[in-house]
Amino acid sequence: MIVYRKYSQFLLPQQGKRIGSVSLICMLAGTLYLHSMENNGRGIKAIGMANAFVAVSDNLWAVNYNPAGLTQVTGIQCSAFIIPNQFGLPELRTTALAAAVPFSFATFALKAEKFGYDLYKETEVGIAFAARLDQNISGGLSLNLHRLDIVRYGSTQNIILNGGILAYALKTVKIGFNFNNMMGATVGRMGEKMPQLVTLGTCWSPLDDLLLSLEMEKDIRYPASIKWGIEQKVFEVLAFHAGVSNNPEKYSAGISVKYSIFEIGYAGYSNLDLGWTHQIEISFILDDK
Image (cartoon, rainbow, N blue to C red; front, side, top):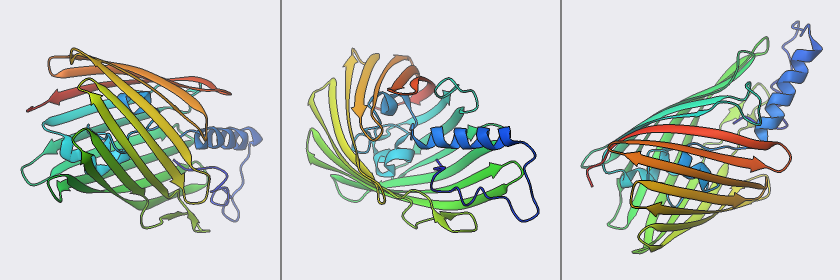
């Protein structure tokens, strides 16, 4: 999402336009600043594992974390994800929809996301595909149209290209790499760059029902963030997730329950200064495995 301190120049009103209420400016600035502190992610499993997901990427939300992981989707998947309010603020509401369909030659996915409220809103729609480059290596790309609307300040939109690779180093060890905003998309009249993120991680499954993940994510202009996550499955119908990360420091946990072709999950994470944020996801999974 857009970072307030990076794109404050975009928020300057055009010549001749004025904001009639100081409270509106404060509301917008506060909203943007809070959201800039948390790249919340999408999907209960990923969020529960503190977003240490670049080497996992085994469901349709790979479209956000590492499109190469879509090759692990073995059946049709659809999901609806919602954050009713972030840090207790209804203005920081997020909704997202995604779907993935595998074919013999590649896997394709679509997504649509919305963040914010009437005065400040970000929307993004995207398409992704992934294919196997070798028996143990997959590659993927996602193309996203991102739009930012701020009442009385106008709007801007950008095309964002992301690319990733996923490889099996061993039968139980995967390595993932993703480059977000490969083309260096910018925003606003001043051409401020949107975040460019490079993520490298690994995951290990020492037991069939246990998964451990570790990754490093770095905005090319800011310090790196280290993330660690764990998943424990119980009888293939219940899964527990937990994780921790720094920059910003947060702790996360989640639970997913699968019944027939449906899965419902809850996850949350705690920011030491801003408190707890809730997430809910409902999925339809028609798996061929």
